[in-house]
Length: 430
Image 1 (cartoon, rainbow, N blue to C red):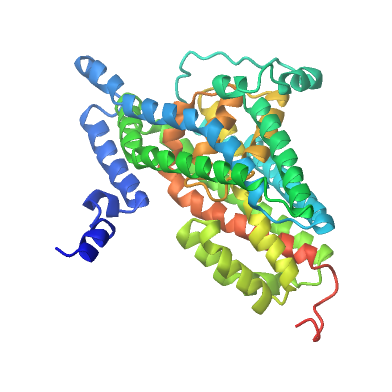
Image 2 (image 1 turned 60 degrees about the vertical axis):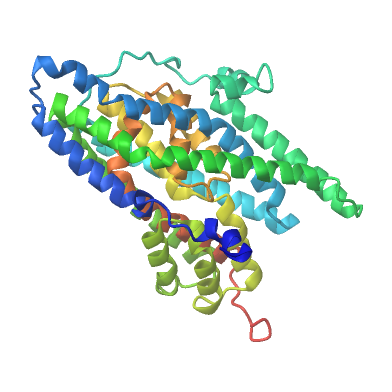
């Protein structure tokens, strides 16, 4: 073998056959096998002699969710820092962009919680609560929330998985590091570059470890679904159907909100917006990735909808790093859904914590694989919900992920249209 061949052999080596199967297909296969095993074990009326085996089926799920929970806090911390350090945001336009992103995400979460509270999809089927105690107080105490937001030590939120404190630290360091970077650039210095490189390496490292955990998600789905079917039959899964309908309804309402904003805040006709953005929406749905859709989104905003390049780039390229409206909506609804399935109650204070956590956990999550699954562990932990039931949501997440990604992209495009203002692009600008 020549030297050239030996240098390139690691790159051309075929990956194992199981790695070439799409994750979605792996989850579907695991789901089919789990249902078959659950039926074989009794489907709601199991033999007492199989009790130990059925209990142990959930072990892979517990391990995977435990690993996700452990990775979630450092991942979000590094992702937020990475986003602040690497994203180029102009001054005045950047402030308006931040307001639009914050408003859209907040509205998305409120829509999600409204639909979940009205339809209550979790009441269609119940699971036994695993002996957890909700630690939040019955009422809304803003002072207690404010006191809890300030950590006793910098690293303590990482150890305790305290999401609110983690967000405060991440945003504080992110804003300061970005300010220092701007000062260094203005002075013609590059002292910030080593810090940016370290953050980038840490981000890539955690992402790769996350890839190992995500590869085990089908095994977690198999275990928790098989155990649920064996112990409870198909009763708990009736609520999943209602949950899918509720999420789709909430996403449609969010899309209507976007079109209303465009109608009153931009020169773009909402029907032209929908027609021109079809390619971006279909790409987002088929790939399940707003990052992969980014070039298509940027192109259709300019070529088919007719926005200025500056507006298109701010919404599609910059805003996409911060904007995950569909994901934030889904996480908020998931927390409320699981609490309903378990017969628990999230009071006003806890739902406010869900809102805050969903907003800030979505910052920088656009480039993270299975971002909704990862940040959902933070949302659940913030209000004391058991994260092991997230594996049940994975059974429908592969479909809802594509739907909410399309809404994420629609949100990016909406921001671009609003930034473009009420005056169309002139011939000279074109």
